[in-house]
Length: 255
Picture 1 (spheres, rainbow, N blue to C red):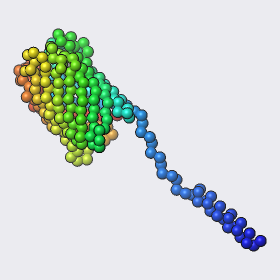
Picture 2 (picture 1 turned 60 degrees about the vertical axis):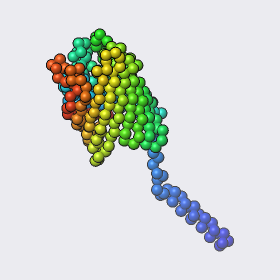
Picture 3 (picture 1 turned 120 degrees about the vertical axis):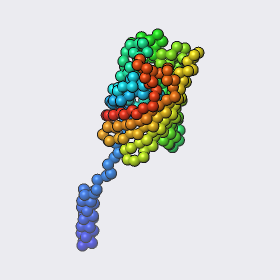
Picture 4 (picture 1 turned 90 degrees about the vertical axis):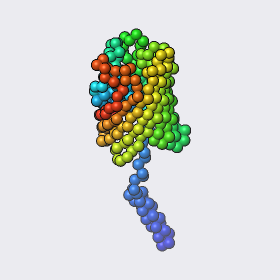
C-alpha cells in the first residue's frame, strides 16, 4: 500500500508541475502579419522647374505635383500623377495641367533581376493645339541591381508633333545609396521624334540627382539636368532655351 501511495503521490506531483509549467511557459513567438493584398499610397511635392526628359515643362519656373499609386502583391499596379505646366500655352494652346495615367506589371526574373511592362498616357485637358498634345506610350524596363534600362514607344502622335507616331525614348538610369538616407542617381536618355521633318527635334538628355530621405515620407532632391536639344527649337515665348543645363530642387512627401 505504501508503494501504491508513493506512486500516486509522485504522479499527482508530476501532473501539478506539468500544469504549472504550461501556465508559466514563455509565450509563443509572435506570428508575422501576412503581406497585404494591395497598398495604396499618395504623394505631393514641388520642384523649382518641372523637367521631363530634360526639357522644362513649366517655363523654367516652379511647379506643384502630386499622385496616387495602387500596387497589388501579384505585381499589377495602377497610378495617376499630375503637375502644373506652361508649355501648352507657350505652344499656342490652352491648359496648364498635365495628368498622367498608367498601369502595368512588375515581376522578378531572378535574384536582383526584374522587369516592368506597362502603358502610360499623358493627358493635357483642353490643350487646343492643332495636333493634340495627348500622348500614349507602351514601355518595358529591365533592372539588374541598381541599374535600369527602359524603352518607351509612342502609339500616338508625340506631344503635339504632327505625324510623329512611333517616336521613342531610350534611357538608362541607376540609383546608389552613398550614405544612410542619401542616394545618387545618374541618368541618360535619347528622345527620338519620328516623322518627316521631325528629326531635328530629337535630342539626348542627361542628369545627376542627389536625394535625401528624412524618413516619415519626407524627401528632398537636387539635380543637375541638361540636354543637347536645338536651342532655337525648345524655347519659351521670351526666347529662353528650355533644355539648358540647370539645377533643379525638389521637395516630396509620400503617405
